Length: 423
Ligand SMILES: [Zn+2]
Figure 1: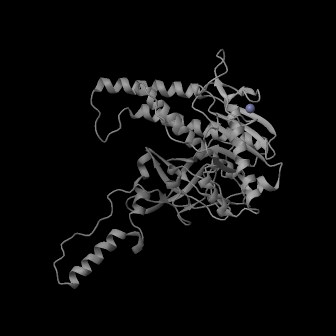
Figure 2: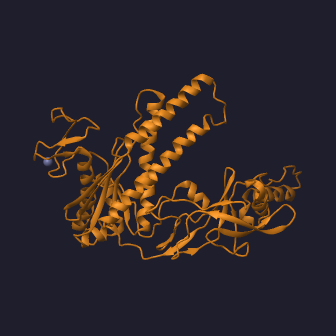
Figure 3: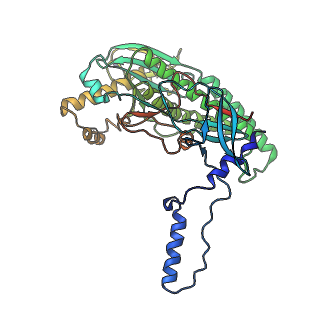
């Protein structure tokens, strides 16, 4: 039923315009042929043929769709013999009113067709981070420490002056780790029973899918919560750490696989938080992760990290408590790290402002060699980051320029797509 009009949009794509730029291999073949003929040689190479199947989404330009409502749309499709209008029912949330709608496209997801619509929203980009931090001491920034343990993210809001305003712990790490580890264990057991894994074929597809979906959902949930927290406290900047290198854990297959996925999720949370924040006018930056959890947020001496019931000395990675012998500070290790992360960003720009007022853009690059700064990730012109899958879906509209934003989702909600069914 779902595949009924599968041939329609595909057919349309197989009949593209004859723009020469779209066929580089055909052009190469033509040049080779011309050269060979000019030299009087026999040319036997066959011309390149278009692929038998296309995986491109079918784009519906103006005139190819009409009568769009919240629940249905009329699409002009090729039925195999003629072009006809087909009314299809759509699911999903409403299109926001303050956005300009682009041409929708159909994307095949298994047995379903999804209708993606790019939305364009124009707004004024926020001021650069350097400007915000150095000119206004009341600028609030939200620093995030991402972890592999129970507290996936620990966020602290502080002002540019250094006043700490609020902290939020975003938990759920143990649950997702346990879930992932169980599924990976099941995969390992099933694999050991089968003995051989067929090449070029996904084994245990359903289980892998389960893990992927759960990871994806969690990354969206955590990133949305981070942005919501920043919004609640009117923070205008998000600060993360650079991820560093993956240190794979030793142990069973499920243990290794789990730690790898937990690490990847950190990267996803950053990517998703970045575009969700940008939609709300919040910029995102990253700082050098070196010793963020070993430094005291109050006096910057090295701290001891320990678990409850243990002596407050030494450094146990991942332990929940922190004690600074220099100033007597005690507290939660992750919270301390998130404060240090925020302080590092402020220190970066204040240092720049002192050294070279007013700081030109290339000053940031100069400082890289000093080891204090790794990079500035966010620029005003830059659009939000979009996961590769989404980027592919939107036909090259990946990043927007000049404060124009291609927006498909709001940060305050977990995104759902418009799904399309046949009537
Ligand atoms: Zn201290």
